[in-house]
Structures are given as structure tokens and as C-alpha cells.
Length: 492
Image (cartoon, rainbow, N blue to C red):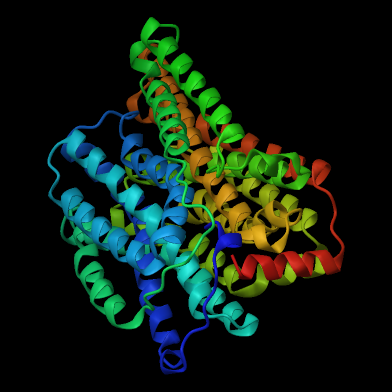
């Protein structure tokens, strides 16, 4: 996810070659904390909502604060690692993430928790970006690098399953505070092992320019837009405050685009979007992320607040989907791409996800697991598992191998931003629908469920639209080109 074309790779010294796989385990443990915090929080959201008295819409900030800073600083984090050393930035990122986790675990007010989650996201962006670069530093041979990236991908996908399970277990047996405090011993252990196992190298670059203005403008723009959307129901969608916030967010986005067009080393090079597959893949990434993050967020609330599931039961309910996604990350998705190309698996995966969301959109207030939850979970797990690799390949299929890391960072940034904005929109839609039904005299449970159903339906439309765009607008790639793109993916 970092700007790899300017990174000089230095082969690992012979004395360190036998320790590369131990170093990979340390890197994966660090990234596992990041992955855990993406899913572990969803299971605990109802408990956090009750304890800290969040409203239905403001609760989305517990997730959005993390995703916005994560997505906003992903590219900048990689650039900092390129300039000042991957090992150094990895250690700083893990240290800050561990301290932010402690702050989250000790939080007793809404503002304190949201602020700590934002700091977690910032640290997570640095760790994620430089961890991939460290893997490239450690494993210079293509075969070893492919194996290392396979292990890394399995940890990222499997961590979702562990996060859902661990979140349910800790929230049920202890309290929601422990879903953050569990990071402390992991973080301390990763820092200690990293000092012994990770190579200390400083990469040399022709330019030491940092696009700080770009990072600040785009992150501020998106945070302001999400804030306006989240509070739109309470403030009024046509109120001066909401309209002003949205206009300022739009103006900052325009300023960001101007900066990226003129700055010498841009955070997000706009020239990439002149490439058809890159542009379409990023749009698909935004739509898909909007649907998938909303599914994780809203389905956890539906199971606990409507069906009365315990946090542990919710974690177990997510297990089938997460296990399927983990299995596809071990190579099934890559084999499908090699057999059918990029377009067909991408469109098929997003269509399966859309059908899964439609099943959730019809789930009743007295839903049964095997009838109303399990089928949707299976389809969403299959859809996400099949589509993830093709989206990345599509984003990198038109760029040179030396720019594959940059293209990967851009599409991951689009994914995180799409998830944050999509979650804000769909959570607000659900809350608005529920409030209107309550005013008209509907029962609390029925109104709450109807709001979730409306959001799931719009999420399904997002996923279906992404499938349609992929099927119609993406350029087909030959088997040889797909193979080259797959190799680029493994090295990014």
C-alpha cells in the first residue's frame, strides 16, 4: 500500500535470512490487532451504545472515527515509511495503536472514546502501510514473497473471524472495555520482538516531499461530510448548519483535487484515474465498501436489538461468513481469476453479496437463525471472498508493476472512505425511517427492524450497482495480463 516504485529493496543479509519467517509472524501479529479492531467492535456496539448513551446515529462514529483516519492517512503512512524507515514507522505505529487501545478501554464518555478511536485509525494506517513494505524488504525472491503474502492475507481474512468471536466472548464474560484492552499485551510483545527481528534499513528516495496538505484537506473534507450526514436527522437536512457543513466539505474536496494536480509528489496521483480500469475499480470499491461496512454494523445491531442475541451469539453468527472469506484468501479467489479473468468473478461476487443483503432486508422481527440469518451470511461471505481479489487486480491491471503498490494504496483508501461515508448514510437512513414510524404510532421493535430493512435494501442496490459497473465497463484482460497483475498483487 505504499509508494513502492521509489523504494530500493535491499536483500536480507545471510545472517537474517533464517529469521525472516519469525519476523513475518511478528508483522502478522501487529496487523492482526488492526484487523481485530475492524470486527471486534461491531459485536460490542449495542453494549457501548447502552453504557455511554449513544444515539442510534451517533453510534456510527465509534466505527467511522476509526475508518476515516485509517483511510485518510493510509497513503501518507506509506510515504512516511518510505522516507524515514519502515521498521521505525512500524514501531511508532504499534506503540501509538497500543496506547490508543488503552485510552479506548478506559473511556467513559462518548467524546473520549471517539477521539481515541480516531487515534487508533491513524496508527492503524501507518502499521498497515509499512507492514506490507517490510514484507517486501524481507522477501525479495518472488516465490518466498508469494508465500509470505499468502500468510499475510490469511491473517487479514481470518482475523475477522477471530475478532467477531473474541468480541462476543469478552463482551459477554467481562465488558466491552476489554475488546480494546486485549490489545495491550499483543502490542507490547510485538514491539519487543520487532526490535530483535525486523531489519533496520532506511530507504533512499529522490524526493523527500510530503503531501501533508493533501492528507489534511481530504481527511477533513470526508470527516465533515460524515459528521453532517450522521447529524442530518437531528439538525434537519435542509438546515443552515447541515447545508453549510456539506458545502465546506465539497469545497475542501475540490481544494484537495487542485493540490493533487499541482503538487510535485501527490498523495493520490490523479493521472491514475485516466486509466479506465483503475477509475472503475475505485468506484466499485466505494460502492462495495458502503454495502459491506453497513452490513457488519447494522446486522450486529439487528441481531442484538431486534432478535435479542447475546454478544457471543452475534460473534458465532458472523463466523460462517468470516471463515468463507478466510478460505478464499488462501488461494481460491486467485484460482478463479486465473480461470475466468477479472470481470466474471468480480460481478458474480458482488451479485452474491447483493442477494445476501436482500435476504437481510426481508428478515422479520421474530427471525430464525437458519432461515433469516445463515443464508445471508453464507452469500455475503462468498461474495466478499470471490470479489476482493478481482477488485484489487482490476485496480492494478492498467498500471506498470512498479506502480502496483501505489494503485493498491489508492483503491484501499477508496475502500475505507466509501465504507465510512456509506455507513454514515445507511445508518442515518435506518434511524430516519425508524423515527418516522415511531411518530406514526408503530411499535418500537417493528420500527427499529423496518429501519434496518431499508438500509439493507439500499446496501443491496450499492452492491448490485458495483456488479453492473464491473460487468459492463471493466476491460477484459488476457490470461497473461491477469497473471502479471496477480504477480503485482502479491508484491504489493
